[in-house]
Image 1 (cartoon, rainbow, N blue to C red):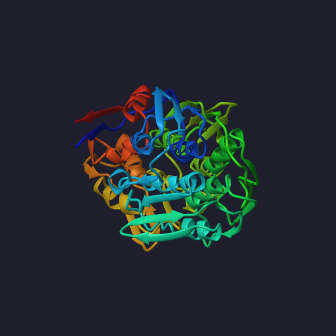
Image 2 (image 1 turned 135 degrees about the vertical axis):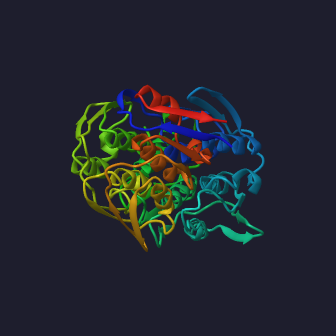
Image 3 (image 1 turned 90 degrees about the vertical axis):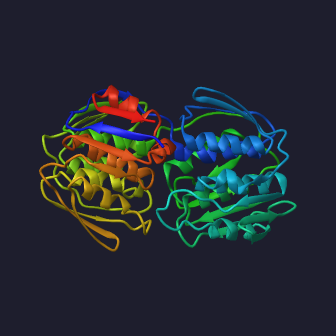
Length: 416
């Protein structure tokens, strides 16, 4: 199993390009199931999760032609609307094939997904929505089995704000008969990107980015070309890495427009940030100020950036309080940060972090994707060598991490 070795204490400086967004690419790739015509996606990140999903689509009968960051999917031969457990057990996003398959094929059999152990992410909202649209849905032997001649538009209200639930139901509604209204919809930029892609394929969608989305169903969708939006979490992660090392970086192919809450907190920490049309510049102070934060659904502070900010607060000049309201198990990185010398106290969903003068390198273990990123950030500023084990989590969400950090002057190498 691969490990990452980081020699800490180097200030990051320079320029790197940000990749396409994993959390936008996964649902958008599933959207290809909705049409019999080829669709082409550009700015696709080279990630393990992307490869897993493309392999899943292939076994369903989808033709996949991939070259670098561009992929063309042809689902005209879709003949196997099944997502088996052995292919989806490592990736929760695999549930996103459910809505498109039911809408296009009238039937789907999708394994309940696996993924990171950061807390419960139930699929009951997906099932409830499909049932309201007329599907017969049963959960048997670990699989969701849905069947319907054709979905019918309905008024859907989700009991909780769910990103994948909103995406799944929005895709399903594109081919349903009549109008579907999704209330209490998630508002993330990735949902807007998916909606833009679907509209380019002929869907009739309004309200994406608000908490009420309206979809007028059509008979069929057609082919299109769509560019995946930049990864706002990767952007935020590299901004934190530069900030914690007192660095100065320019990130291209991205925008502060998706990152208001994160940028506000970086400014609170003492960083200077300049927003360009297609890039972000950050200059960090010699030592960061502590930052309090509370995670909540978009547009509030993202749970996917909580771990990275905790790593920053570990070496800030004071006490910070972090409250996690989205996932109940999302402080597992705190124990590993303590191995590096961090002063963190956990009480339920609250972490109190007392900044220390310096962290010290040690061997730590990644527990999930964003926890891995926090350990990398801490390792960059720790004295001596930090060894991070189980970095397959990182490969699920960060394209070319070692190369990008090395381009900014970090000492990072992978041991296979």
